[in-house]
Length: 101
Image (tube, rainbow, N blue to C red; front, side, top):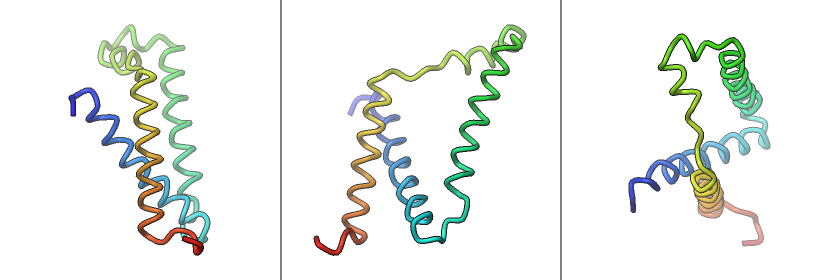
């Protein structure tokens, strides 16, 4: 496996397992507000990045400019989402899928 594929595959594996865990907690009533907090945290991070760009903070701090300039490619996102879906599917079927299987 090339180095280019290691990060998206690793992140997809973690993302699939985490999404399944949060969805399971939400459906069974054991998860509380974990899914809502996860979504709100992502909204807050994107909002902070947008505010930093709007106020021109990336011109003062080069480190911030490098962070704001990072954008994953479509191939990276696609591979990550496919691996996340496959991981969640495998865990679901091995852990106890639907009763008809």
